[in-house]
Image (cartoon, rainbow, N blue to C red; front, side):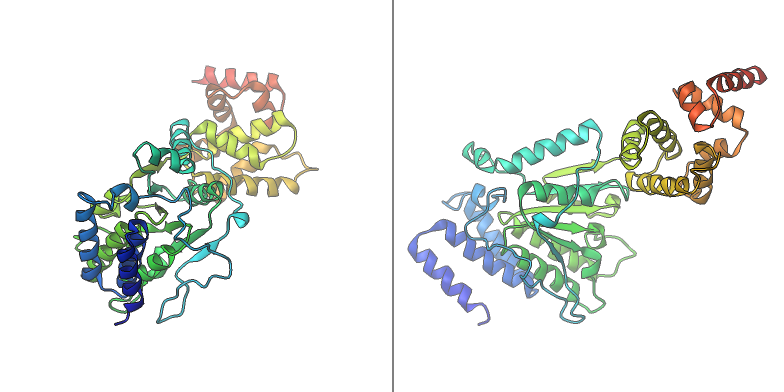
Length: 394
């Protein structure tokens, strides 16, 4: 019997009457079964535990205990710990990041998003107090939004605040062309993660967690999604799980129920974009502010990552124009042309039009005459005249 050592440990603990250690040994057996692809047997054990938890000492709060405070039954993850691999390709199924090596800074979010992040972190860092009140810390977080909005950075930042290593898995990397291998890889990943005190981050979550009735998917995806759901259920009580996706509409409805906290990350609004751009610029504060505002106006509809790329390109262009009289606004127009596929068509049309109407439009959108004078390398009187002349033409 392949898992006989686990069974003997389970029986020994059961005879000793230690329910906490018993739960751990049962969880080990469930993880081992899932890793082997024995989904039905693992599901039967989960069903038994859930049924028993309603009427016995194996309390739900213990089964769903999150990992803000390390469980004594979990091992410590180190950089030398070997990660599981795909048995066919030998490719690693995940990457381990230690807290000291995580350099992620908290992205800029709207106040309502930031308030939810703060509340969740407070919950995770005070798990003992929550359990003392008869409650359980949220074991899981699903973060969704457009690419480049800071989802992965947020997950890594949260793990660093908790002082826990990250097991980072891109779920598209778990997919195999061999029948049954993808489900086996999912089981192996969770079995590995559940042994250690860590944060499991599932990137590109939609690659596997797709709607099971999608007519474009073959039957294998249903088996994979079922395996994922069972592993998510089994992980409750083992640690924090964070799922990340750019395509939330593709997720199977049952996936949403597995994540207690669901956080949408929107594209940055104008003032957020200004702050993002300012962080990447240097020089005179008033000039930086003006540059950041125009870059942010151009970057309407872009993600924070796209704006940082645009700002970096602007800085590099300006390095070679220090001794020339090219206005900053003209440099930004060049950049907009070089990335026109990403720029809002209305903004791009305004940038490519005559300078007078553009100056007037920016003035109407709260750009000061002083800002515009710097950006177009002219005087405030000239800016005022252009605004008035354009207005009279209209």
